Image 1 (cartoon, rainbow, N blue to C red):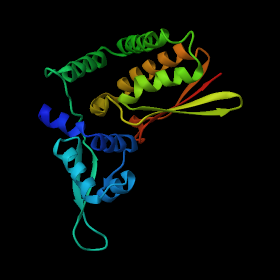
Image 2 (image 1 turned 135 degrees about the horizontal axis):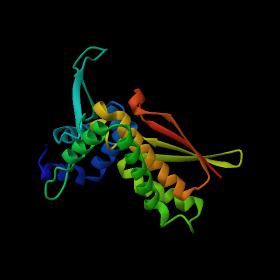
Image 3 (image 1 turned 30 degrees about the vertical axis):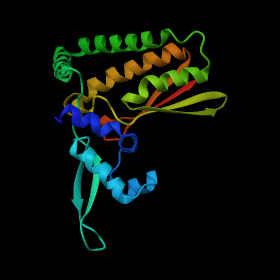
Image 4 (image 1 turned 180 degrees about the horizontal axis):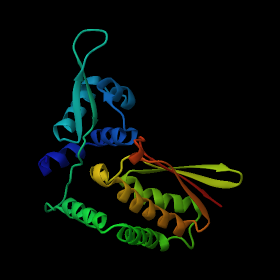
Amino acid sequence: MPKTLQLTSTLADETRYSIYQYIVKERKVVSVQDIADQFGIHPNVARMHLSKLDDSKLLRSELIKNRKGGRPARIYNLAENPVYLSFPKQEDHLLLQWLIELVSSLGEEAILKGKEMAYVHGKRLMNNFSSTCTFEEKINILTENTTSIGYLPSIQEENHKKVITFSIYNCPYKNHMKNHSELICALHESYLRGQFDALFPTNDFVQLDSIQDQCQNCLYHIEVL
């Protein structure tokens, strides 16, 4: 795990933080030139930012052969394992791992109870806002509460209904998906359903894609009146 000071120093730079957020959101491999073009900066500056993110283990890099010949090119992608940062150091991720394994071992009844708890928690989180807010205010509340953990909503209007496409592009539980994807996705979806049912009591909530099915992200389609 990177030293805390190194990690905080790496993300303290506004441009570097924006680059990291862009890579998280896009979930794709990038080159120095890609970042230089995207942010309008010199390739040497882009290389410096990417190298610092790589050194801090926020990204991982590898060399690939240049199809045109010449020196190999370095590409960058998100690190496989998340970085945990807390003051003082905590091991909450270990506790989460133990609880996931406990629930899984107790079978279907425990999973159903877990989904119920996640739903209630999601609904309770939004109940304080639901009665007086406009549609736009509700979307802002959802966005503000969830962007930091990888949710990205977009809104369209179809047949006099608002259609919210809700994409989870950086699952906060991806480190546990390999062994417990079904449980984690069920709890996460129940939590999201609770939030929507509190803010939009009349809705049609459908999951279109899921990371556990090897999709790039989890994608939800929600119609609200």
